[in-house]
Image 1 (tube, one colour):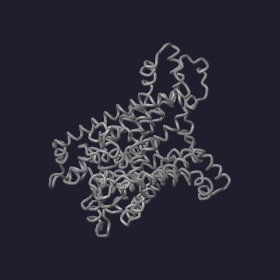
Image 2: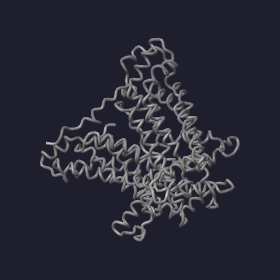
Image 3: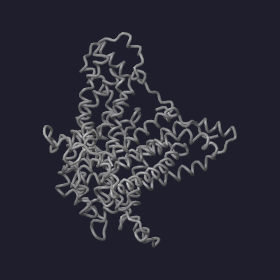
Image 4: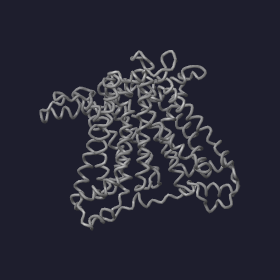
Length: 263
Length: 317
């Protein structure tokens, strides 16, 4: 291929891709402005924000997302560091677990959680803790990949041994040496988890929680223009989270951790 | 001649990799403080294994056990025979059809876009924009995606109305319906394309410019280059990507739930309905359905890992 035709080919497919990506967004945006007959207005957005259920469900999902980030990081970060430093043999096993949430999609996970935890001795199906546990499982591959990439991009062993030979204990090595170096990876993992959990539908609907995902689905059933406004707001949320990840991970290797999501 | 080969992605140095792989590090000659090593070190992984056992392995195996039980809890194979009931079989067929169609459609479009951005004919910032955007778009799924497509291709959606007013074409008269097979497939393709871009760009980066130049110098045509070099090298990656996209669509619940409201009996929708309202009047059948799904997903992931191993000969990750 000559350079000119190569360039034409590139532009052609790029434009087709961009149209496919942006047309639904443009359509949603225009649709969301039609809340008032005859004029373009932001009245659909006003309705969305004025609905007390919006704030209530969003706050609930945000809380669940924050708990998921805390539990997920507390569980996965020490594990990943320990695997890198002490048991590299365990790495393939952990990586299998990072693929398992793909084999066990959210519907199956919800089904299994209900079956396992609705009877004594572990009747915790009505506790939000079970929802958070499920979210940690869903977010695990994203958090693990991000932390693993962060750990690989620094010389963990040299850092740890340097710290210890200077008399630092495990605690201060972790908090003063390793974690500051993992800052970018941790922030990426946290924002991606937030974006995924806040809009999550499957676990929330099947475990019967009044979360933001089921609320959006309900609005979609009953109203016309407000769902389009919600779609635009959700897109802004996802774009914001991932934009922040890109901004903080610019220039550091291993920023690519955003494969897939919960569909 | 074409522009200089891009160095991105190929010469990326990964410090710490040797350390992670357990190769002796200079400093390890005089280690200071030893924690437990060998078997003892595995104790540090106990919290993690307890958690994934409790919330991933136990729930998954309870589905497995449940699919071999009748409602009273006795052992039976009968649930698997029920998988061959016409309505259940139909639901598997339609789910496979949607997953294969969107994997193929998303795979081809995603590949062409990825190829376009790795060819090197586009301004540099566009490439990083596209990878950021693919990250966003592959995560833009579920309820909001369904809403976006209703606003686009629904009865009063932007494209539907434009086609009607500009060209006099009534999409819905031609048999198209957003809430049926093609509508669902077009919607799924929205998150399949960017996922394909994210998966396949590293593989395309692994294709050395020198291979192409060498074959051109030896007189090969573009077609010959693709048939003899390009496709054989890329094939494992392409197949792996297809399988990943297939599984991605097969397990999807939220988009279908909020788009069709259960009009199309996809397997995940059927399982969800079973959990919510017992519409099948047979809980054991729900387990069998879920079990069948886990089998399909397991086969895909095993095939995916195997193909990844083959393709890593060319694409160092």
